[in-house]
Image 1 (cartoon, rainbow, N blue to C red):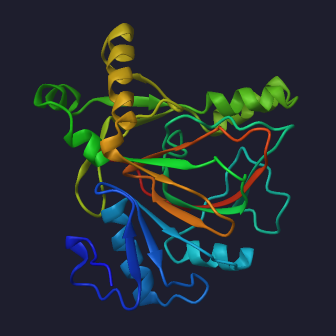
Image 2 (image 1 turned 120 degrees about the vertical axis):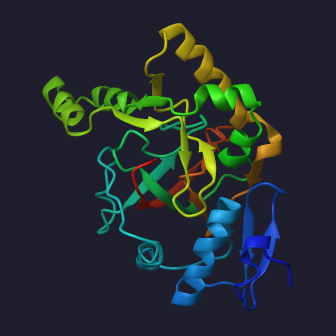
Length: 288
């Protein structure tokens, strides 16, 4: 049996085998059925998630109800305000469907919903249909990315606050024909949010970079050009292979990432082939 990460030695991994995808981030948990896990296993997975930032499960041919129930054991579930959930009786499930008519577009490093006052703890993503090749997802350990900064930069960004917004989703509403009144109402409902550039994990106490190219717009209290230059340098940390793992999807594979300490990037190399995914997201806490 594979050995668990050091911080998990006091937890009995039972019959599970852990396959680490890189030294820094990402572990496949073999020998598990997410539809039948008990509370002890849930606690163990929660700790493994904090240590490894993203955990994966293969061959989980379960009903959508089991996907939702599994996620709910880690916390309250989020209903995304910008995704159509009418395909399912479960409003917590969002569908990420790409094909010839709907090319992929989220090939950008990001943490989910950082434009919320309380962003997500993490998301559990299922592959329904995958292309014959391509369509992988990359994950980056943003705690390691922070640790990799030089001391001068760490001192410089300590205590800084960044502004996050959902303008990309508002533009999407406009492209789909929403009225300006509808867009403005959504903007008022979900205004820009201020989060620390360096957040502290609520479980481990570790520091991580908490800015991302998709949703972070600026850093407060410094000149705009300085903000842009600094953010670009911090964004670039996610691109370093030493902080990454890459996951090759198969149908009925699941990925569960810690949105508090990891970013992800959906590779858009498979168009015009199809890729259909289902995501359930767990509400987190206010970054500090």
